[in-house]
Length: 538
Image 1 (tube, helix red, strand yellow):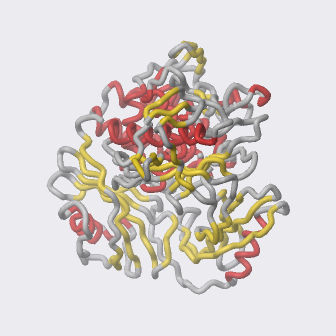
Image 2 (cartoon, one colour):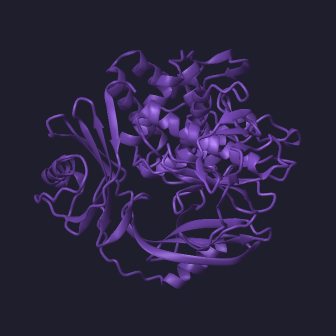
Image 3 (cartoon, rainbow, N blue to C red):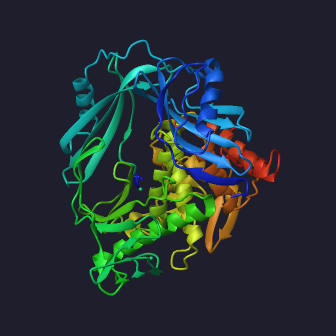
């Protein structure tokens, strides 16, 4: 998250991992196809060339295929990242939609117009941008470093040259902190800023999920906590050490010493055994892997069959868990024992891994309304993973992080999807100021939508837990179930959302997804529209 924890219908066939093709896009000129689905990228390139003026494709641009989604009927959706003069373009991502025969069926773009800038020479030096980002970390940070990268910013108004600078360091407890600052390369003015750390079976006795089955690897007469059936995912001990990173480059990283065991019975169900938290983390990874594979036909976080890894016992009294793309890993603190216990619960694992899915698909920017949607995506899928597990020791619910919260915290959970404002900070309803909230609180609008879409409005009991979800417009909403919620949100995330998607854009994306999956004008389409209106997104 970080946790502030501040980290299919038969119509859908398969998600194909991104290729790594880059080329200059000239209007009217088709580009060579990368490796991937036969002809999908070539057809999309041809469509871009034919519609260059309308889509803002100009000389000097390059593009890379990030992902291709192929439907059962042969329709394809090719997602691109773009560059200008070799510089990454924030908001340059676009999705080209191809009909079954390969003809152009439309496109979704993060930025509506041209992404060209008049110059790529900054007036503000990189050193000034680095100093600005280090200052943004605050005074309690030590060993701070920063790296600055020139980009074209097309997300915040018209395209302009900008510095994207990530500063990182450690606080006085030795915990990692990182912040990215986006600043105008002509004036030095801050455009945006966000946290750079996205904060989220053999047989094992876990802390929160009872005794669970674990797939392990025989090694040296014993066993490693490494699952060869799920992309060789594994869990290691960080030995209470922390990372020292410079932006995306880690000068040193806390170790992940793979857990081993002699009899293949892991943990004791208590924190006295360091392997117990590892059981929870590995179980969370396995269950999340199975959820995405069995429900959405996605094998692994990146859709390429490769496993991630976990680090537990990170830092000292560390009240957080987070996903990092740079190591393709999840990291869990032990908590301080007063506010939080070890942050290895199942919904937290599902939340963190879902940040990875978002980073490989829509790549929702971690600020403003898109940042709220990023966090809500992880809350939604973390919740659906918990329901998918159907584990009687940790039944599914619409409470986020309830297992890790200690009694003295003062609340039963970190977040409440039925009525997010129960935490006293999150928004139940959209307003023009929602994007100014911390992303963990602006996420409340989408979390509320998700509960209404799945369960409906008003008071109800779901699997023994009482909820009450009022609407913002006084309407009554009938739910269509968690299964349809998950399929609609996943389709919208992977096919229609882009890095700059706002709440209005999320409404459009989910309505498109509902149409794809269940038909236009049906019950599901009407339910999506009603649930968004119920949270004031019209």
